[in-house]
Amino acid sequence: MKKCIAFHSYKGGTGKSTISANISVLLVKRGYNVLLLDMDVYAPTLQTYFSQEPTYWINNFLFNTAEFENVIYDLTRLIRNYPTSQDPQQKLGKLFVSFSNSSKEEITKLDGTLRQDASKLELLRKFIMIKEDMAYQNDIDYIIIDTSPGIRFWSINSLAIADLILLSLKMDSIDIEGTKKMASEIYSAFTKLGTKSVLLFNRAAGYCLPPNLIQETSYAPEANYANVLTEQSTITDRLKKDVDMEIIGNIPCYCDIQFDNKEFLTVLKHPYHPFTHLLNNLVDKIDKM
Image (cartoon, rainbow, N blue to C red):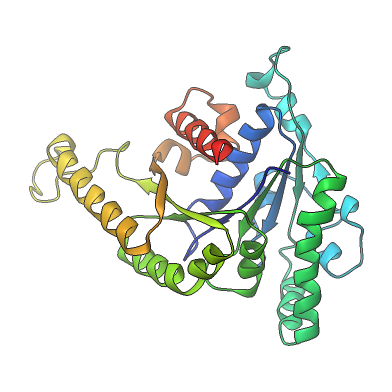
């Protein structure tokens, strides 16, 4: 297996699920076999994103009510059958996805296990098994994990098995200060064990031009654009220095994607969109690490 990559953030709404799903598809289009795990157990979304109604969930594997092969779903057909993917010369890998159950009962059950040390240890063993045993049995090249935001047991377990952590964040003070805190309290410990962590800025300014907020009577986005980018660059440079992490990407806020009625795998729907181009660049960097 090449890598286990965890997408993490201080708070929700930073685009982890969208980016992790699209990155998974781009890796499959390059011929890799990818396992995408939804470990955002408190607010799982991938089953809705992929329009799936699973019979078994990753929860079933964690609680020994299903074998691992029963909780992963081969969704390669979604890529192969998509109009923009009909290239007979292209050798696709396989896309496997495992979903997390969003029912209140299952979330309560997961929370209940955290009160027992023995159960915590058993669940950690399950995570290690996924990486060290199950991935090899299924010939997986990349494991992509969509984690719970913040410092929680489930996200820590996901980070513990990751080779690479992509910390996604937006350009607001809450996210930035929270990221600094996690970098000092959490990521530094994983770095000492050999895990690499990098910053991924998402939904930054640059595509939808902001209005000139100083001159309220006029709408002149171009006049304010340079100031916004300068301020943004100052913020990213300062954070990079404060947390001692590389910035692997800076993705603008694309309103046409964010407010799409049914957001689904933009890299397939719009292969020539700037978002797709930036994610391909991100995959290039990941593949070389």
